[in-house]
Amino acid sequence: MFDMIREMLSFDFIIKALVVGILVSLCAALLGVSLVLKRYSMIGDGLSHVGFGTLAIAVSLGLAPLQVSIPLLLLAAFLLLRISESSRIKGDAAIALISSSSLAAGVVVLAMTVGMNTDVCNYLFGTILAMKNSDVYLSVSLASVILVLFALFYNKIFSVTFDEGFARATGTNAKLYNMLIAFMTALVIVVGMRIMGAMLISSLIIFPALTAMRVLKSFRQVIICSAILSVCCFFAGILISFAFDTPAGASVVLVNLVAFLVFAAIAQAGKLVVVKEVK
Amino acid sequence: MATLIECDSLSYRYEQSSVWAVKDVSFTVDEGDYICVVGENGSGKSTLIRMVIGLIKPMGGGIAFKGIGHNEIGYLPQQAPVQSDFPASVMEVVLTGRLNKKGFLPFLGKSDAMAAEANLERLGALGLRRRAYRELSGGQRQRVLLARALCASEKLLVLDEPVTGLDPLAQSEMYRIIRELNEGGLTVLMVSHDVAGAVRAAGRILHMDTEALFFGNTDRYLLSEPGRGFLSGVAPRDIPPGAPHGADADITKDAHPKREGTSDV
Image (cartoon, rainbow over all chains, first blue to last red; front, top):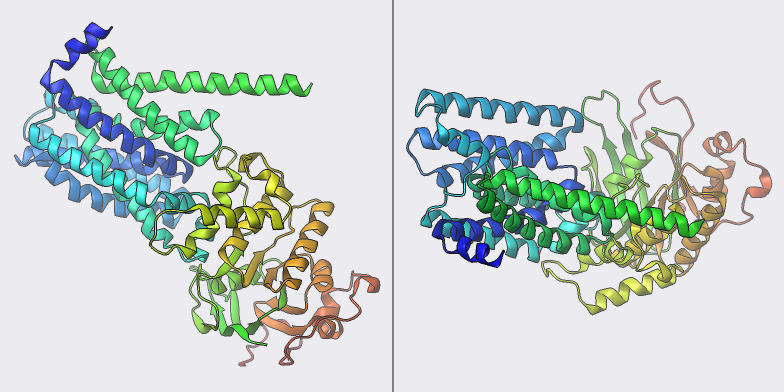
């Protein structure tokens, strides 16, 4: 096992993927708790599909994918948040429309320009080989900014997540923090999309939060646990991908699924014990 | 008595609605007041309160804050069904009440934790501080949220339907707690369905039916037409002998149907 880790770490591209991936997992897990609790999971999903569209456009125009995707995705985050705030049920449907349309547009653009090749598959399901040095620098700095912002606004983010009405009544600019959460999510998705793939990146946001919430009861515990889980699952996923030659993104998602099932089982077992004690 | 908030002919109409939810409502909140806003469902009570605490902007009229800041309002929202899986400890919830005092400072300190615990203790809920909020009963949750509101303000509490959905024992507990807070110097502005409880508790009544049908002391409300109409089901012994005194500027209107001609005030 340790030999395998050592062997894996001797590859430069894996180191890059690990550095970026671990930072992305960390950010995604932190934001994910708030997104899941605010019922904003759809925004993450919508953003990743829009991200695929922007990536396709950038590639077909021969532009740098990250630099094109970031501003477009920030714009999309702004729009998606407005839509989901305006009305809940219609908002869901509108986000689904936007996601599938941008996915379709991306596929059409790619088919017309570079053709449907393995690259397209890589955009959809991720590749561990995607990270260039410049991408790594940009990703690391964006992730650091997100971590600092999250730490600074942790209390406000909790307040807005728990009870937006109270937060606003006591002078917190809830709209600003909602926007901040959406923008940070957009950045996480842009950065993580190349490794995890447009189809799979939103699971990185949703899984760790849901898993941690099975057993833990305070916001802080859930945040910390989901961050640790996310990083561990990412590392384990990459290791499995290296050992069994499976796709990296999909392996990470499956490890997350296993973690979720384990935590859900623990929660169920805990309930049974409590019921027995009561009896 | 110093005035805290002066509301001048507030009006609000929801999007896609052709009728006013609140129309031309004027009232003042003075220091030490215990005001109860009563009215039937859809009479605009909650809309009015949402304007006062700044959740929605009035479409007509204005609100003047005197001797109190916009963010110095301790707000107890209408009970919403809590997401059954929301992870939050009682302390985490109560501490959010301290954030308005922090401004741009990002972190909470020891003094905040002490203030939160003091407010929990004041409400007899200190024992809950390590519990998970989602595991509490309705009455316990109300106490925790009230402690949060107390953290946010030492001056004014705005309570939206604080007793709705509580069992009778928890209801009378809640009324007792609110009365004690008011006697301790806090100004209380409360919205309630429970008119009988409201006239027993409050010093002044604002009776809403889109417009303000009555605003003034509780004893005068009991004799007024809207008051008698609304309270016809309440036994006389429930009526308090002498209600606390408030301002004398009572607006007493006839309880005529509101859509039958708009009276400009």
